Length: 295
Image 1 (cartoon, helix red, strand yellow):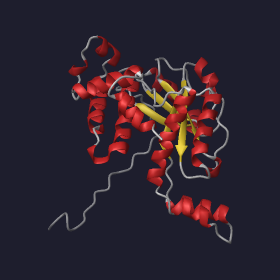
Image 2 (tube, rainbow, N blue to C red):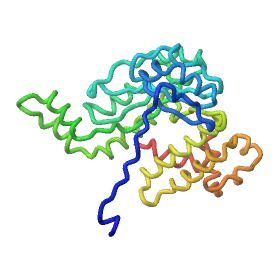
Image 3 (cartoon, helix red, strand yellow):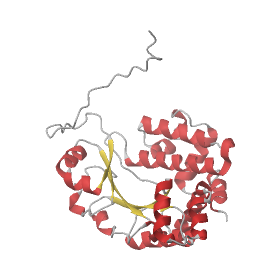
Image 4 (cartoon, helix red, strand yellow):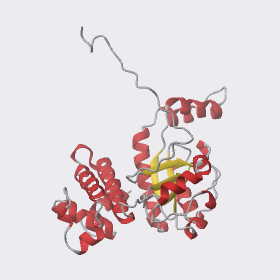
């Protein structure tokens, strides 16, 4: 008998989370939750934060400041408000300023996708984020499976069809368009003075500075991949970022001590890039940034 050819499958018994199953993990974790879940699980979320866990709440529904328990650590809780073009059903951003008084970083998830005048839409989204009081912006491609594109086309094209809309939704290189829109978002963020990237959530074992520094390296690793393809050095940044997060060391203290090389993966080029990207200027980051924001 060959178990592989017989296609034997062992079905593990399903384990449902019961009402009494509210144990806070001993090892702090980061949780992502939607607005409705934040409201419903307010008490348990408070216990998670008290236990040193971090929370990233997506502002995709009604969510008041009081619905999210007050964090006990700097950068422990982060709120992310999605922004979509009106073409995809987006509405106005909520006021994010009150979250600062609660000690919670609030930013905008800028969803990038095809639409009429897409570059103008991206600039409009950044301007709206600035007006809403966002502390940061995170540009991200919008996931658009064919069924969603067909649904939008059927709604907007009518019975007679729309060749221009059809070309936009079905004959456009969506990956390349998303890259160009993300580069435009970076130019717009620099224009209005909004930082890019995710500043948290931190946990009791991974400080905010460590998470934010690692996230910056991961962001630019991806952008190097988009710029340089298979010859990209992004894998070096990615490896160093993962090692930094695993070490839980304070990167600014390591920089001050000239000790970044104790973290695996921080070879001379990665160390120079990390120092310059965390400082906001310097080589080799300036060269990569110039290529990224170039028209």
